[in-house]
Image 1 (cartoon, rainbow, N blue to C red):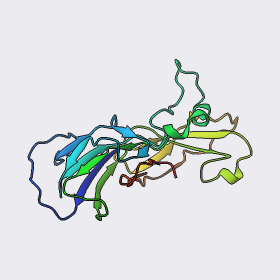
Image 2: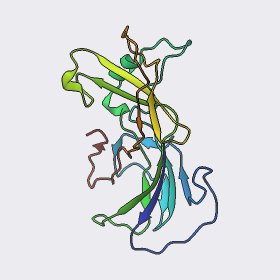
Image 3: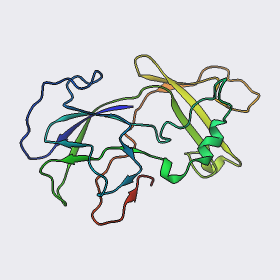
Length: 198
């Protein structure tokens, strides 16, 4: 997923004309999704120093850190088994941290999400201990994969969705795309890190 953020707070900024991102050419900075953590922690060094009104292209992983993928001919792993094997420390990665020039502990920070552009396959799951329908699940985890339309407006469940069901759908299941940020936050004061998992 690609995010374009605008940091808004009261300090001066310098403008940049360098196009660091082919997806968001107006971005002043680009942070790849390889710069992730699963804790909010003041001891993690910042990957970027940014100022007021700078546009930042931030790449993110899905909540499974990109570890859950459809099986292929060379991969026999059941995605639902992978979901069940993931530890809390592998879930909900955040990209960063970003150091805000001039911001001090206790300051209010305003971040505007200018654009969210999902890429690749989406994945969703539901099990006895997670997911919106967990109270209906009697056993195991069900994992589904979703394709995004070319214009990014429609999401369609894949037919090869790893379901062990012997029934077939009468028609494709599609719905409007409604991208969400996932998780965002600031480093806590003190020494104790805070998990990105609620």
